[in-house]
Image (cartoon, rainbow, N blue to C red; front, side, top):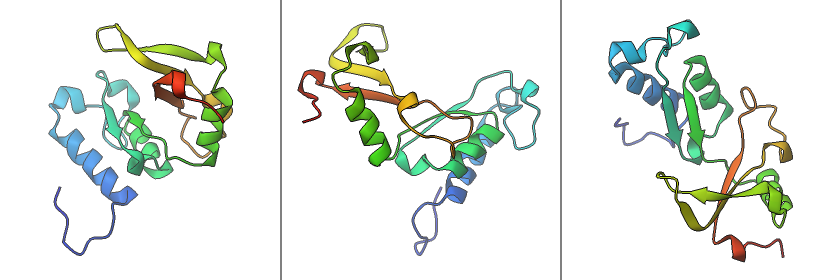
Length: 142
């Protein structure tokens, strides 16, 4: 989606317009239930969007929820997220081996679910915070 050359940085409204445009491009049987105001029961097919940290805003996540769309967004790095990661460092039962798409272990990578270590009240329905770390043997809080 091209914007005027004098446009400012992406906004929540920009992200929602792109989301709505993407839903409009889906075949009708897939898009059904994923428009604003659609009854969730009409959503017979899952739709999931992925965004970098620019999409990690309460406005965009609420818009995705209002359209019955799942999402994966990169959490913005902030003190709360960094503290959760460092609180989990060295806690062996928190980290699980990461795997590739075909289920094989990903060498030197692990994943941890850190939701309980953050305050996420402004987020719609309290999404989960997952952390993937590469070269975990080098990860330390020091």
